Structures are given as structure tokens and as C-alpha cells.
Image (cartoon, rainbow, N blue to C red; front, side, top):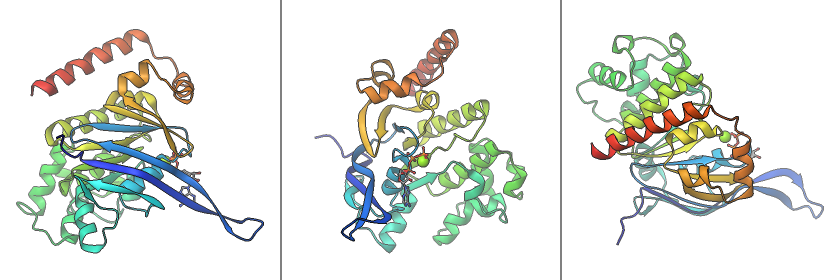
Length: 285
Ligand SMILES: Nc1ncnc2c1ncn2[C@@H]1O[C@H](COP(=O)(O)OP(=O)(O)OP(=O)(O)O)[C@@H](O)[C@H]1O
Ligand SMILES: [Mg+2]
């Protein structure tokens, strides 16, 4: 028997009212997410790609239980969490953290890094290991920020640094699944690569699963273990990263891949070689 995956979503549907009643006066609705099933295993990254409006963020919100599905279930470590309320949902929120595109919008500008990073623990009335100061410094070091800056405010950081604060805050509660919704999309390419490396390193250390949403296929190629391709609310193709990139089966995926600007083949070869080495190291670690 194989163990239950870290997270499994089955038959997720989300309908939104369109606001325009039909001729018969019934409320009309459309399906932003239409029968989506996916699995994320511990230590792996499932990327969801697809054009704007294909339902990626809505899927993420359903999996994170930030939104009620019209139909379908979400399981975490084999337990159905779809009907979780209050106390159970609190536990779930610890286990599943979400990192969004714009770090500044999810960080209260009037709170210092220390307060931001420890807030989830304070809110949950949990003891902060080693005290707030030392705990914050430790986390800042882990995400590559200078721990001496724990008294600063979000506006005093760059976009990449602010996203690292968001990652530190997610780490603070010890998550099992981390959902990244376009978490690196707003960053410059070089900063993007650094944050992706950080996410990979943290995954190697902690073994958490990522549900990684991005419209940028170059980013997905760097981080994904498996890829799910969404179009009009449905997953049209799903498979191992290399299979999807090297031999896409679905016409939509082929179109999506063709839309990517060609990368310098030599650079691409070197990057893949470096990635292969990293993966080997990860495996032997
Ligand atoms: N709260 C909502 N109410 C009504 N419609 C919504 C709501 N949230 C999303 N939608 C619609 O559902 C569809 C899917 O949206 P979603 O945000 O999931 O797409 P996405 O794939 O994340 O797109 P993007 O790449 O632009 O972020 C879109 O047509 C969107 O307008
Ligand atoms: Mg989105």
C-alpha cells in the first residue's frame, strides 16, 4: 500500500455567479474551476500553469480552504478537510501556508519584521521558541536576510527581500504544504532565481510539498517536479516536468510552450546540467 499523498484534491468545482440572470430569471453562473483533481506529495513541487483566467488562483484558494468549493474535496495527509470549521481549520491553516505575488500587500506596513514573522504564533497563542527576538533572527538568517534588520518595516525592503519576509512568516508556523501563487512573478529575473533557489533549499531541508502557480514556464521549469496545465478551469494535461516540456501531448500545452521566447540553448544546457547536479546532491543528501 502506498501512503496517502500530502495533499489530494478531488473533483474540485468553483462556480461564480455572473450577475446576469438568464432569460428565465435563474441566476447564471460560470465554472472558474471545473472538476480539478490533483495530488501533491511531500518533498515535491506540483506546478500549475495556464493562461490568465484559466482558474489557477481559484484552484489554489480552494486547496488552501480560503474559499468554499461548489463541489469536490480536499484531503491533507489522507484526512478530508473539506468540512473543517473553526478549531480544525486553525490547525489546517498552520499546515498549509500561502505565499502571494505581491509581498507588500500581504505584509502590514505598520508592523516590524519581528512582529510580522511572529504574529501567526502570537495569534495562535503558541510559545515562541527561544523568544521573539532570537526566533525572528533565526528565521531571517534562514531566508537570507540580515537578522539585524528585524526592527525595520516592509517599506524599507526591496521586493525580493519583502518576499523573503513573507517566506519567513510562512516558515514560522512549520507548514507541510506551501502554496505559492505567482510568488516570484513580480520579481526581476535575477532576484527571481535567488528566491527560487531559496524555495528549493528550504524544500530540501524541510521536505514540504509545494503547489506552485506560475504563468512563466521558464520559472516552472526551474522548480517543478510535475506540471499540471490548466485551460478554462480544467486540467488538460498533467505529468512529470520533462515529459510536459519535451513531449507535450495536448494541443493547448504545445501552444503554451511555443509562446515562450527561445532561450539560448547553451545557457539552457548549462542551467539544466547545474540543476541535474543539484538534484543529485539533494538525492544523496
Ligand atoms: N471572486 C470571484 N468572483 C467572480 N469571478 C471570479 C472570482 N475570482 C476569480 N474569478 C474569475 O474566475 C476565472 C479564473 O480566475 P483565476 O484568478 O483563478 O485565474 P488565474 O488562472 O489565476 O489567472 P491569472 O494568471 O490572471 O492570475 C476568471 O475568469 C476570473 O475572472
Ligand atoms: Mg492568478
